[in-house]
Length: 568
Image 1 (tube, rainbow, N blue to C red):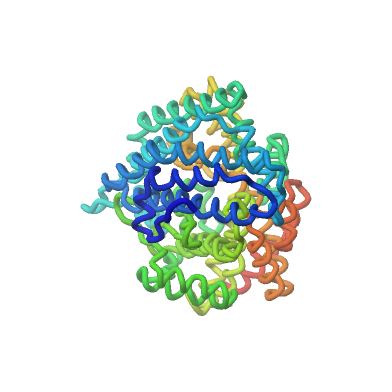
Image 2 (image 1 turned 60 degrees about the vertical axis):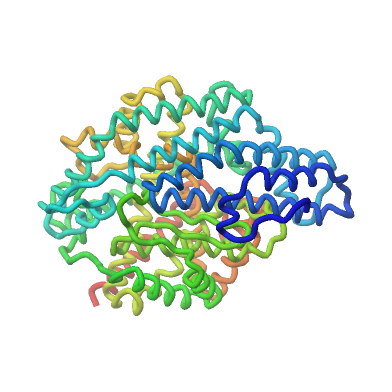
């Protein structure tokens, strides 16, 4: 290595191109051959991990406090001054490795990915990608600043969501309408931001010699080698055929239990039998302790990983003002450690979110043994198997930690029903994005987007009455951050959920064997193809209606079992 690289988290977050450039230059200058390939790849990994962790830490700083101007300035400086240089240097090293014709052990899939990246790379797109990231920050700031004054106090949107579990239907409706009214105030700003997003993305596609076909660009950029856009559309059709009728049964049971002729949007999160909301934990410490107990029971090694995260301050879980929406798990590459971000407000959804992000975190730990950074680029379709499987694997241990037996059955019923209802929603998000990028002129027109979202909603999401709420329904795409920040990143959840239910089915037969296979899949990182990763974890990669039928049958069977448990 040409010069010492920073090692502390503070120094890494402040790294400059002046520090990284000599390391990249030295790698580029070396003669590459079979005898030094391993050492060269390890040196490349070392510098790439510093660049990667710097971005992660700077990005985390802007999401934990969207009002932190210094953090935003530092991230913008990195995006303007360092990121373009790193991207160009990484591209040169990829081309050097490919030109050498070497095939290091365990590097078949990374080489395949590099070839695709090299073919797609255009220097002109580097500043456009930086600009796209900045637009994503604008979106976060818009959403993070949305608050409602409720009973004289300023409340965040996640907090307002807690009111939707209130047994009083009048309170729920008032809270829902107040939150939506505030969101609609930003309708013009989000529409404007969307137009800027789309213009950037069409420019990226054009620079890559793909005309205005941004979908083709993103499909290659996301390295989707194992299924096509047409396969994705067939998956949408399979969901309409198999899952939508099952989802309608869930909605009908809920309406009957609540004594309603029709469900309204504020009727979907409350307990249908009028029981008070589940309150699984009292505060952040309680959430941590109880989650620790669940992970320990799933597998002692996984529990040890979570204990490490707690000890090293790798969790930011509580909701607060000026915190970015949603939840995520990122990694700090140099330290081979994950970081979990979320917005907990004391509901069962928070437990599920931590189980989900915990699965991502365990993926980081389990694949940390791999020597080269490129081996840890896991396909997102399988990364989500890691997270969704952990939700299901942890479910049986909610009793005795967060809940009583009856409460746990109730919580798990909510989870299995929401899993079933997720597929149709996923189909809306996925189909919407296909429409946008197949029809970019119309896709830039926010009113056409509204109409298309509404049409797709009616196709996949029957069972809830939105009469008189047309503006709220049409702008649902405003509230799905993936559409704005990570285009086409949503079908992964639907595909992964199919894999996760297969892992769960395995666990019903033999928990220890299922968990061992799950960990074996995670340990492969990105060294295997998508079908092989699924197979290693004990599942089959599939987009067909038959696999969906098996999964839906398992869900409905489990719901029947849980109903019996919840009444004992």
